[in-house]
Figure 1 (tube, rainbow, N blue to C red):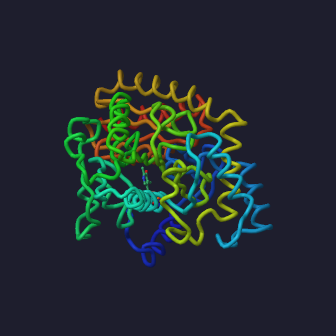
Figure 2 (cartoon, helix red, strand yellow):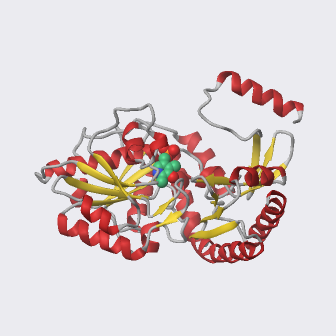
Figure 3 (cartoon, rainbow, N blue to C red):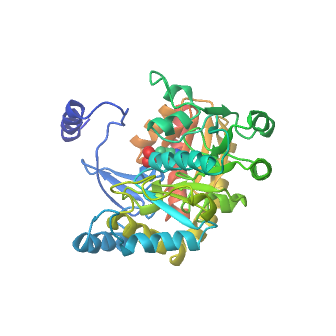
Length: 398
Ligand SMILES: *Cc1c(COP(=O)(O)O)cnc(C)c1O
């Protein structure tokens, strides 16, 4: 490894807590679909900061918004009203089935907000229980409530006791869910497309049945759209792609194009469960983050990014399926829009490392899936460039 990179990595390992297994490269800058490491090597990026950099790198509109907003007002707390926050909330409401937004700073915080709201709502309605059902293989974040909601043992180890009254059922299994529902159930939480768990989409009929069950039993249906939301499926929200409207939805990752933000949305009848003082966030919805969010929304709707994801997403599926014909180690191609994955019968880590060597950034999901969550600006030529490198890497690793 080159000296400059090695030195920086050593400095980092000395002082930054080792909670991540990082790839041994240090990224310096980016432009459009590409990033460069500190040695000047160029990579085409199909990770996008894990589904965060929705407009790619160095997007001029986003740069301008952030610079101008920074000169005007970065933050002033929720003691006061600010226009960027109101404008982003208006746009999210206008393009969804929801009436109200709560802003926070991350995916996990948006889940905490939803968990609290679900229990408050049950109390408000005089319901007996506060049990929340979530899915096996789900991922909802790392704070205590969110990590408890996450249906994967490996994230729970050593953290016990976890938050009480959360239980797990297999995803896409309606009978198991129906059996788990009881008079104490107040909410069901799921990702319409499981992300970290391995790019596992819900069946449409399953979601329809779950919706009906929730209506019959007066249970809140909550979608975690932190990864699959904000344009990734070709609609603003993933629930629109599935045609099933939840009562509560959470967003984060791509919403402000890389500036930290989170949001929870719901309808008025649920929002009433939160009264002044019930929930808050110092940074939540600050002017810088929400101004960035407004710009992301503008790009999605006015610059044809949603259409691009729909069209180019189909192209990516076709190209991945072609690659599958050539490489039998690809067991499955799944997902939709710019949230797709391939399941491999060979170690994914080897393939990802080889791709990085060849100038392509990819990230895993689950234990045998490589995930494709590029910036929403990716075009067919970028898909072609990605496929070419992946093809080479697979040929070497097989
Ligand atoms: C990333 C992710 C989270 C957690 O978001 P953070 O910003 O890391 O807290 C929650 N849910 C889903 C579906 C995610 O993909």
